[in-house]
Length: 404
Image 1 (cartoon, rainbow, N blue to C red):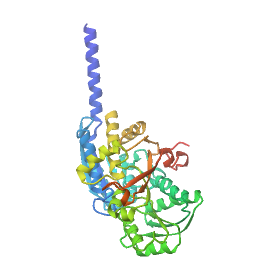
Image 2 (spheres, one colour):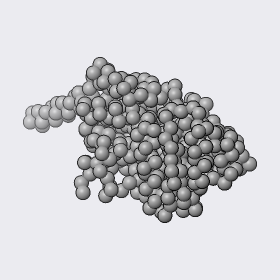
Image 3 (tube, rainbow, N blue to C red):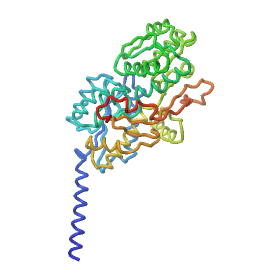
Image 4 (tube, rainbow, N blue to C red):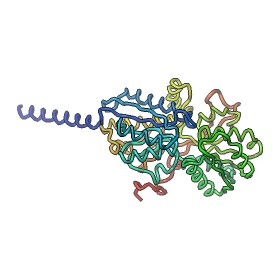
């Protein structure tokens, strides 16, 4: 009996020691989330306050704690400027001991913060930035690109338009990393499918007056004017094209990155007929409608794919912390790559070794006013694009983590 009691006591002590060790893996006795987003500028509608609301929902849904420790949320407006984002990221690492950076809308700010996260082995959960560079030459073990990228946009919208006969293209491109990557990835799809690029023009980011750029596109005679920009830049370009009668004159606009917030801003009269690729639509099925209703009740708006992606990425992150008992960046990122992703946002999801979260995407068309049942009933889903078809295959990856 004494032997059994001694053995039992040893086992209990060992179990407690393991539990204490697991708890000790949560640094600073809290899990700290740092949201860097555009709270006031060009991308504030598609990301911004809605991203913060989505993160708050995720934290509330796990009871404000993970692995028994409080979750602390920090937010900052990076103003779409890489230096501001980088300075805030350094401060958060050094002073606040932030464990993960979230959203990072705008590719230039994402790349700046990624470098700091890489140096400090912090997790980045990128939802808003789009460049395919993020999981190619700039990839690293704790970097995860969640919602979409320029390759999936090109393979969705670009390919569909070329296959429908839109063979000649002119690009109107935001002159920074995101726009340049999007133009490059769509150009490849256009050429691979028998189309041609007849010209292009790059505009400052952000821009307010698109008149001269639209006139250049109009005079090019291209069948398709590809808008390699996003947010307010896209809506302003579409409004200018409408004023100059571009579509009435026989040319078509290809919104290569269009969000439901853009359509809401434009109105169906102007936006109708636009084809787009999205990683999420609030009215796709019962799961998306249920979560989106909660988001709408909190914000008064339906979520963009960036905002829904932030919630989904954080829930997967919290699950990995629970599984490992740790908020150590490499440990958590490795666990996130082991676990499948299947929720209201991601269908058939998985995080690959390059950090790309691969999931089904949707090719959609904006409804005509007569076909809409009311506010936010904007999309007709034309096709579900399987994740393995939507994203760059690993065989084409330039990420050094990918084994060839």
